[in-house]
Length: 188
Image 1: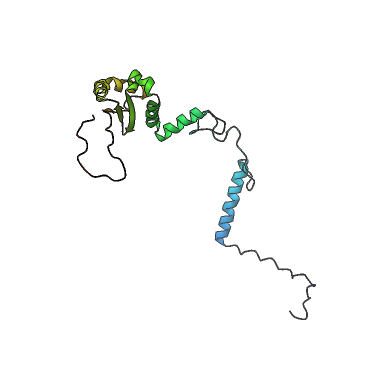
Image 2: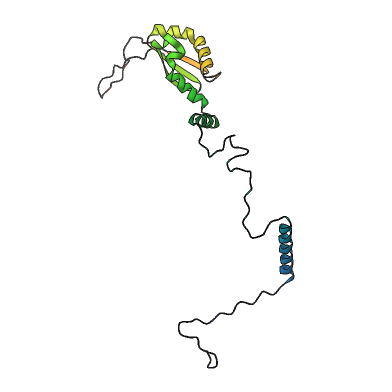
């Protein structure tokens, strides 16, 4: 600082001069003119540039194409939502087969006393009979069982019904096993 310049008071910072405005060029003039035209067009439409956008009346958030008839944020019945979820993910067939497993007795009737469903994979239902005689009888009843399953859970969900005889008992006792031919009797 020179001796001629006044010293700032203690605790005060010297004032900073504002920057000088930029020198207009043809490009900045063209941009300013375009911005002015856009603002004028907005005002002629009733808009006020720089103000927040007004809310549109009559449109409820969560409605329209892709949303159910009911507002998506309203409480909805659990069964309806589960049905929609199962349809979206393609879970209808596995769930309906699971219902067959749970309602086996009411679907097949008295046959349930002698046969139980074991597995369902890739359209194939495996049923285990409690004796070889019942396995033979169920083998003859497969077309009627197939028709009943189609009525109950839908056409083509169960492509094949496989009837197995009773499982052989395990003769293995203890932690060590010696390989061999096993029992000489048939179990199914």
